[in-house]
Length: 509
Image (cartoon, rainbow, N blue to C red; front, side):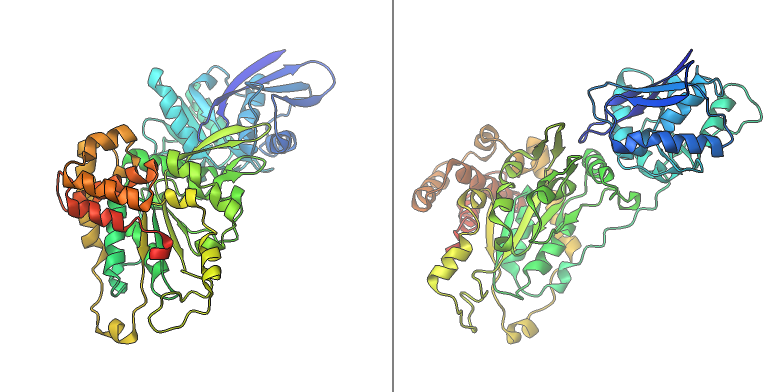
């Protein structure tokens, strides 16, 4: 009998728990058994591994092979376990040195010709290896060559990219003292970063009030609803908004990249670039929050530390929009399924756009609206009060006449506004260590401190407009962001008055 132990990683939400692949060879009728809660893709590894070993000119043992993947209660999915299973069989049968396996972790899908194919979640797995290494010497990580760039963005973990199974075996034999074997050099990120290609605010004429509101939203991380007739530039403004956001920190970049890596959407050249996700209004609730058999992340998690833009907001199914309520408050989403319970981050910045009525021309200066008051009311009521209560700023984007458009100068270049945003955000981070939108109620009381006329103005507006406690705090957060834009350490009446204007109901916009 022979036994080999190989280390690998599963992916469960944003975590990548360690999986121990134990390969046992015993006498008896030839067989290949996989245990440890494997999904269908993992069970199919039997045929892929058998063909890969034979085509790579290794001996496939004609013995009873048992592969156990521990812990047994953790579901194992995807073909990433092909490589550790193959290495375990080779080590258990004495074809490669087994003493070195404890120094490495392995993940990769094998083709029938023994080539290694890329996998999803490589960055999330490497990040887990890095965090586990805080208490011990980090293990090296063997991965498919196509995953090497994204994995090596995580510092502190030796990454060894391999094109096929033979390269992995050759490296292990080299470490065991075989002078003829070729080692795999440790890979370091060699990524040519592409600068963000967001459209520029220079293209947007007029709409100075909306641009001002978006600048304030970028400073504090606030959610925004743009309301206006068709063709007034709501989508243009939203598409240019990511260019205003401050540069991502290292932790933000790693978290964003790790989520995208789970679904194979991360491109290393887009490292530290804010994500802009714009799902169609026909999207389902699982598409937004995540779900499915594998509890995959949805749009709100893929937009983590980026922007989620919902155009034509009332056209979304109301039940779909309601799933946004908890993530907007907590910045996380928990997906519960019968066999899975996973958490994903969802600290996104919500931008939404809508017409004021079904025909779109309610309040238009020159085009007559064809909608009755009841139709307008029903259309606007498609967005529930609890959801609207969580949207910090409601901004009107009015129609401009052709004469106004031709007479107006070009807009301000995005980079100038982005510099102001970065300075104001830095002021907030130095003061409280987080953006204004993430302040809890106790921190709002400490940081904002409305006093005298400012407090009286807030109380009067709250009583007149019927604000909830949440709305009251959100107005204070927006006012704090306005003060940061102005470079003021204290809240003044004009800051609060402007924040109150952004809290108007839809019927007032």
